[in-house]
Each structure stands twice: as structure tokens, then as C-alpha cells.
Length: 165
Ligand SMILES: [Zn+2]
Image 1 (spheres, helix red, strand yellow):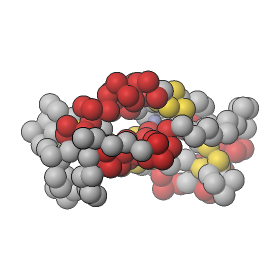
Image 2 (tube, rainbow, N blue to C red):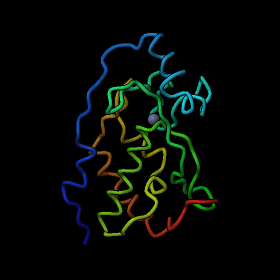
Image 3 (cartoon, helix red, strand yellow):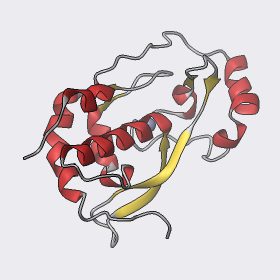
């Protein structure tokens, strides 16, 4: 019997502030050169996040410390067409955070213990559940999450230890 206490779903019901204005070229330059040069350099200038479709400039947002920054998640995601059912991809960290939390919630629902989380979630699923906003965290479509959640749970036994090679 699956249990899914409300608090474990809390992450996707939170609301996050929205920047609500366009970044200045000075701010973008500052992120590129001062706050996030390493992360900025991990993907080409014309890259868009495969999860949310946002450009690099639109992914820049304030951190909890109120600093404008750019960050990406470089890790394994689910891909049923691959021999090991996983694919290594770079997504924006807001999409990566969604995958991570979906994985945690799925594991928790069947008391599966700890393990790889984002590797349970496919990029097409991230695309379905995120409602992207420029320079802000994503809003989450909870109805879509409900519709894909059981698929994610069924993968848990298949993805035992996808880290490493
Ligand atoms: Zn993204």
C-alpha cells in the first residue's frame, strides 16, 4: 500500500518569487564573469535547457542569498531507450531540482530508502510538469505530477546504482 503524506509533496506546492523584470546587460555580465563563470562555461551560449526550454539568460535567478547566479545540473536522468535506462544530461538547476524531488517523493511513497533520484525521471516528464518562468524557479503542475507519478515509482527497482560509469 503506497503512502504519500502531504509533507513529502510540499516541495511542489511552494510558491517562489518571480523577478518580474528584465535583467540588465550589466547584471548578465556580472553573472557570467563574477558569480557563475564556471557554470556559465559548462554549456554553449546558444544552449537551451532540454527540460524547460529556457535560454541561459532566462535561467539566471536570485539565490537564497539574494545573489543573481546561473547554475546547471550535470547528472543522470531516466531514458528507457538507453541500454542502462539512463542518460547523462545537463539541465538547468531548477529542472534538476524538480527531478531530484520527484525521485525523492517516489522513493518515499514505497519506503524504498535512499538511492539515485533524478535517474528515475525522464526529461520529457520534467517538460510536462514544469511551468517555466524567466529568471525565477518553476511552478509545478501538480495534476501532471499525479498523472506521471506511478510511472516513476515503477522504475525504482530498475535503477539500483546508476552513478559511476
Ligand atoms: Zn530547465
